[in-house]
Picture (spheres, one colour):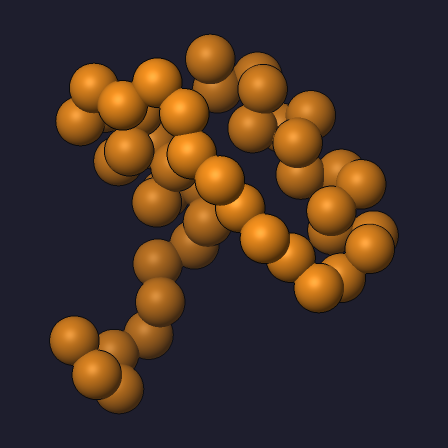
Length: 45
């Protein structure tokens, strides 16, 4: 919905996982975030 706040990344990834998908691609521009996020995403299964 245009203008609506975006859901947090972890919430979006949980929704993707819970829908039965087994992977997702994420592009980020912040190097610090890119270095930390893959490990936390991997912990979600």
